[in-house]
Structure formats: structure tokens, C-alpha cells
Image (tube, rainbow over all chains, first blue to last red; front, top):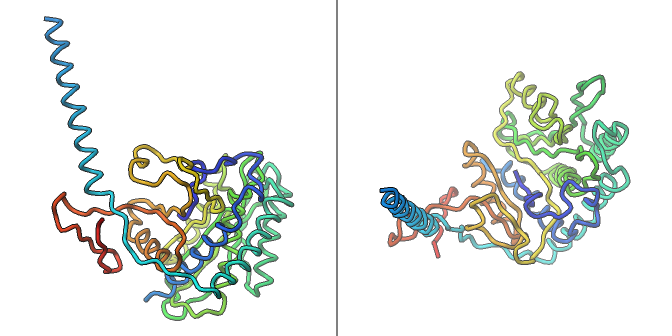
Length: 46
Length: 291
């Protein structure tokens, strides 16, 4: 599992305030880029 | 007599406490080793790519966790709309969507998935999954529209790239209570079906709540006693797995560290007893040096 750890970090976890604006778009994008590249390498490795 | 026994008990407790503290300190010395792997420096092209990626990710999050909002079997129409959106995005990527439908108390719900065939070992499946339902009372932008957004952008980004293994992207239904760890949980349905078909799933990576990061001190909590070994700022991606999947966890961690400079945390390594050479060998065969 890849995770930002949810209840251990996120103040809006399981709450009505878990809205798009609660995310950090910039960091989310950087993390996602690394995750996509990770799966690409995993699937490409012999 | 009573006093003597009380005194004896006190000594015993003190000894136990001393042993516990010593053990904890020793454990920390021996295990608290973070991999020292050189991290890449991302160039301008990668940064431009990430900016475009960020915009597409946030669009998915805004649709699922904003316009559609709470989506689960208490809000069946929204759940259906979410499935419709995921299917629409994949169809737009020219991928054939498979719907895995089942009924829960008379209500139809479904997992959705697409695949990219491997060219070397197509029978080996790397499964990447994210649940698309949200918990009761929450629009679930981070939990888990963020994971679904990455899933949708991963299939798009890997499309047409020759890969040795087959990659299967699955949007799971019914992860949240009251279905969590029941037979109506979408991921369990998929796993049973895969087993019945004799499929070889060599790795399963769950994308779970991946959109919140902060550098603030003490922003990160841990299940006891992990807090003693990990950073206090919640600015990293966590790579987590059970004991049986520890080789995969290490492999994922190594790939992630080689692919990006984004902070990441995973299982710490044994470095031997205090006073030993302090050298450990990583899963990839790379040698890492302890601090």
C-alpha cells in the first residue's frame, strides 16, 4: 500500500471537510509522478 | 513481611523497567537505519510534466470528491456516477473497461478495471488498485478520490509503453464500512475471482489516500511504538505491507527512491550489533551505508 497515512496525518479524514481544497495539489502531483514511475519500473523489470 | 514483599516487587519492577529501556535503546541503535540511496534531481522537462499531471489529477479529484461527492451504497446514484466517470476516462484512453458486477442487498455495484498486456511475461500481473467509494458522510476527496486520480493517470501515462508484465488497474467498490473486510468488499470479490481463474498476480499495490502533505513538526502520528523511529513531519509517502510482502515493499521503496526526490518512508533495516561494520545490503544488491 502506498499512502499519506490518512488518519495518522490528515485532519479531514472521514469527515465532511475531506474536500478537494484540503489536498496539497503540488505535493500530490510530485508524489503521484513518483508512484507512476515506480509502477512503470516494477512492471518493466525482468 | 508485607513490606519486604512490597520492596521486592519494587526491585523487580525497577529491573524490568531498566531492561525494557535498555532493550528499546538497543533496538533503536540496531534497527533505525534509513536507506542511503542517492535521489535523482528532476530536470525542467520532468517538472513541466508534473505540473500538467497535477492539473489532470486535481480535475479527477474535483469531479469525484467535489461535484459527485459522497458515493457509496447509501448514495447509490452518486456511486453509479463515480463508476460512470471512471469508465468514461478509461474509454477516452482507448482502454476496454471490464465491469465486475455483484448485488448487495438488491443493489447492483461494481469494480471496474482495465489492463495493459505485458510483452515479456504477460501471465504475471501487477495489480494496482484504488477504492472509489467514500465513507458515509464524507465527499472523500483525499480518501480516496486521490488514489483513483493516480490510478486514472497511471493507466494513461503507461499506455503504449512496452512493459514486460501485465498491469491491471482496478477501481474497487465497497472498501469503506460497513463492507470493510466483508464478502461484499470489492477487492475481496476481485481476489476470489482472480483465484478461481488461476491468475498469477505477482504484486498488488493499493493507492490509498495520497493527497495530503505538510512540513509542520509533530504533524505525523504513528501506531505505537513507530513514532520513536520515524519523522515527526507528515511530508512523505508511506510504503506499507504485511510481513509476507516484505520483498515487494522493499522493491517498491527502491524504485520510488530512484525515480523521485519526493520524501518516502518504509520499513527500516537491520544494521547489525553496535560496533559492527554498519554495512547492509539492499534488496537490489546496492550497498547502503549506515550513518
